[in-house]
Length: 93
Image (cartoon, rainbow, N blue to C red; front, top):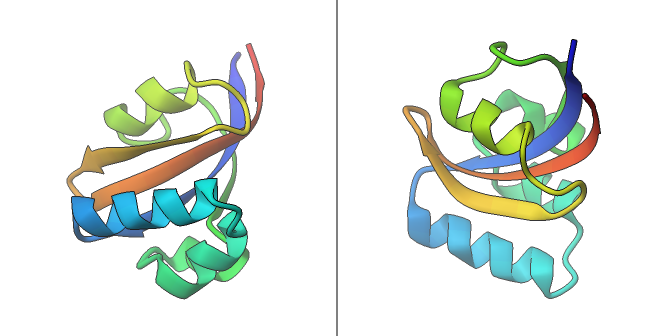
């Protein structure tokens, strides 16, 4: 069964999400940005979501996590929780 590890940053607006993505692409540390900005409890771990399989996260997450290139920041991804930046850190198919 496929497994992935990923981390994310959750914010309430697409504009904030884009702003943070620009900062990360400019060299800001993903984990530090997550700790300072993400509204998800995972922010305490730098946005780390651990290991999970298909269907364990919301559909929009699954679609990105199980198709995106490894270690490349994806987003904004809109879910019912808000706007996410996602980074797949590993995946086994």
